[in-house]
Figure 1: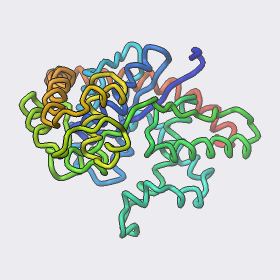
Figure 2 (figure 1 turned 45 degrees about the vertical axis):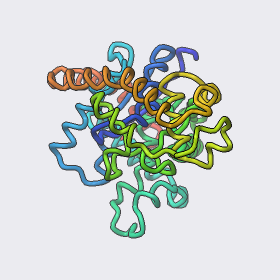
Figure 3 (figure 1 turned 60 degrees about the horizontal axis):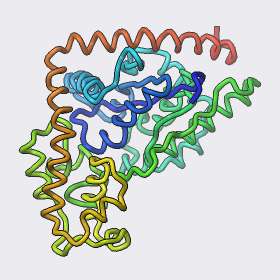
Figure 4 (figure 1 turned 180 degrees about the horizontal axis):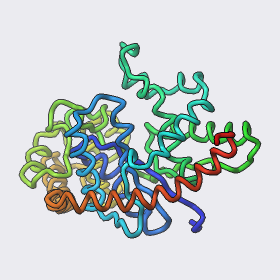
Length: 334
């Protein structure tokens, strides 16, 4: 990747990040940091599309920053800040609200999923938040965005908005069309209780997920109780696909052991799931417990975390204001 390329990604401060966040985002962030200029944002404005208790939101922002640092992000190499501290995100979001089309937003499947059956009671923010996501990316003229399957549609919307802005204001290539960075061979981390559902903080049972702050004892208990299968582990992916919980455990083992899925299946085929669970728990404890300990240690010095956010905001604001100056001029704002 050339120096002209720029990665932007945001993480919602929902608190208590879990294994899915770790494999799907945080570990990849650290890898990207070594190759290219990166901006990582705690997207607190996105979080309030659903009501948040103010004190909990503040704590969750700091915990997310602690999770960034504990997994290896370096604030001297990457810009780390919280979204609401750079007012340009909200300003550009409004401008892009006037560029984006209602028909485009009506096609966003995630709103339908999150709003549920009574969408009339959902906040306007939840409906238009893909426009804010576009503003997050385009404010820095980011060229690449790490995304999972559930966010790919929103990135495509960001590209449509960027293209329409460029066309409307006769400024070809002003906004780059951001490209997705999709991790190769990474599988979605599913619930330990239901292999058809993504691992999520919102699931009622804490035994459905491995949290980054879980102790060794917590991880052992959760993996031991994870839903699996009574038959020996099959030797092929087709058979495993019929057993979603079993496949999930193999996928997690593959990810934490940094081996491909075929190799993980070969290693475990014919064995009982108790053997897989023992090996998986050991691997997770070795990988996750040190991260959790570092998160807790960092949270003991909140002024340090706040200082990192402040310095990151200063760096982000310099880029944002320079780009906004040009955006205002193109739109005709004085």
